[in-house]
Image (cartoon, rainbow, N blue to C red):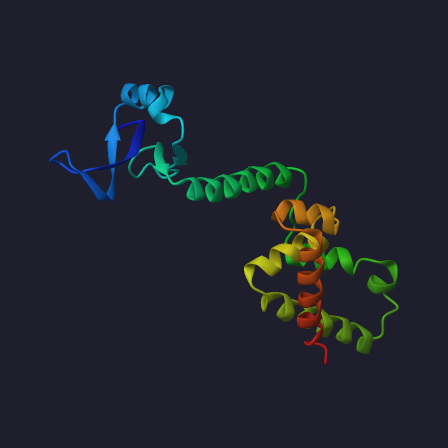
Length: 184
């Protein structure tokens, strides 16, 4: 199995005539190095892809358009930033978070009447159903803002999710309205 694959765009057909169609051709490592180091390779864009399951090759370099490169670069930078930020906070399970939220002396007090204890249990079940009704992106936001051991601010969550703080606030308010509907 190859360790690296280098793919470049080629719009010449087999007969040596320039074609409208672009195809990807594979180059050797030396050919690729020579291409990107000379003038012909100056305004070309390449993305670096990794294969975590070793299906074809651990690393692939593929030529793409400038727009595709910018999209990939933005996504890749966001991925690296989220990976770095994820090291700074610890996710906890929904049950652990509920235990933390309901661990004040008043709530775990043995002075709760059976009715109050049943009401608390019902509230927790409603909260669980509301949380499970959210899609993955909304759950991630709620985890960042409320369910981490050290919850993030809206600004911090915005940087993790690679969106604006205003977008985080708007999504949070929408999610909380949706969750509130489980109590009405």
